[in-house]
Image (cartoon, rainbow, N blue to C red):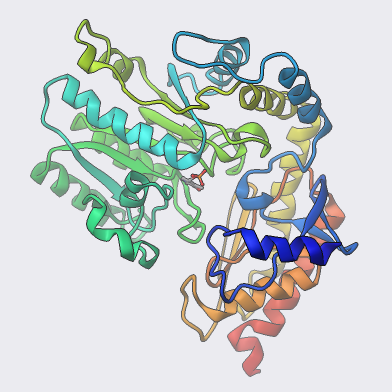
Length: 431
Ligand SMILES: *Cc1c(COP(=O)(O)O)cnc(C)c1O
């Protein structure tokens, strides 16, 4: 049975981020429960990457499932221009309590699009005011998604080679570390002097796809302060960092200087349905109010504000607001800290870093440290064979699990990583 399905998969399906010629057969997953995925051959896998960072409460969560079912049989979708519905309004009402510096909510259905919306809002904000500002500033190593605007704002990557002539120019500054904060500030100030900058976009505190690169809120606060002084809008891409990944509900909670716009997706619906939000301040929203129709924000998608997605997001908030979930998050952070302390002197570790529930370990290897590096594929297979789903970014292994992961499951993840360090690390292999 499994083989038949896989044959048909190969016949029909073009998988994402996959070289279809050389990729092995995909795993057929029949079922999920909590942090576990069950394949067609009786194997289980611990989903230690939350299925591309979306799953926060575990798979097939009954509370979210029930709420979705009720909503499906009440109102599955309605056009969102000229109409509204309770799930969308209630979601804004509840979510904005966590983000009091944001006042208005625009709906779309994936992280990349939430970023496109944010960029378009910033550009049109100045256009509507008759101010000539259109340059975008972004960080090195950034990832903001796969649509053209998001690709342009993201760091230069050879994935984008075929499209480069169609992407727009973005001014880039270094991700601010302890060593280069002064340089980053200097470059930012220079760009602000030389160009007409409309916005600064960043992944706050953790740059995910760039390799789980982490930096300090104080540094980001300084960059935002400089932007503020120059009337530049700040976009926090919290698509990955949102919903307690960094230990707090949002990475922006660590900041004194709050962003003008926030993009949310991934964890928003608890990992069940595609939904995203772009939040902004009244100040931005007001620049679109006019008797002149041309100042309208002409953007929207067929499934904008989908009620089932909104209901899933509300159900996910219910779970976040349970004491048990908050305990799980605390325990996960503490477990990571304990493992961090235990393993940090391992000779195969070049760097180990943690922010909240995310733990990243950079392997000391001989091979090139790129996404394409061979070590990445070896590690992926090694973990899968041992029942753990981890998708290293080049030589960076990271753990970003659903918060319901059990202590035993987490120990198993730590254990396979330790064994991999012993087996694959350059120094370990030499000795
Ligand atoms: C995943 C991601 C995106 C893109 O979201 P999609 O839903 O995959 O389009 C944007 N920004 C960040 C920080 C992300 O991690």
